[in-house]
Length: 95
Ligand SMILES: [Zn+2]
Image (cartoon, rainbow, N blue to C red; front, side, top):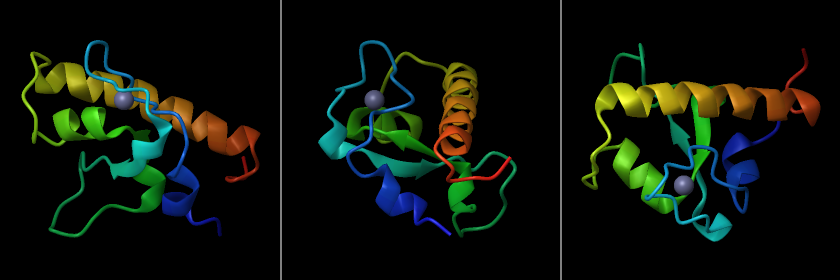
C-alpha cells in the first residue's frame, strides 16, 4: 500500500481556506480528520487531507481564524472528497 504520508509531501493543499492558505506545497502534510474517531491515536491515513501549514494550524486550532468549527468541517468534507477522488484517479485506491 502507498505511504499516504510520504505521498502528501509537495502536493497542493486541498483545504485551501480563503485568506488563510499559503499555497506553498513545500509545507503540505497529511492532516488527519478525527471526526468520529475516538482515542488519542490518529485515524487511518485514508482519513487525511493534504494541508499546507497555515490551513493545518487553523484546522487543528493552533491558529485563530474567523472560521467556525462547522465551516471548517464542511470545508474538510469537500477537501477529503476531492482527496479520495484524486486517489482513485491516480490508482492509489482501487474503486
Ligand atoms: Zn492551505
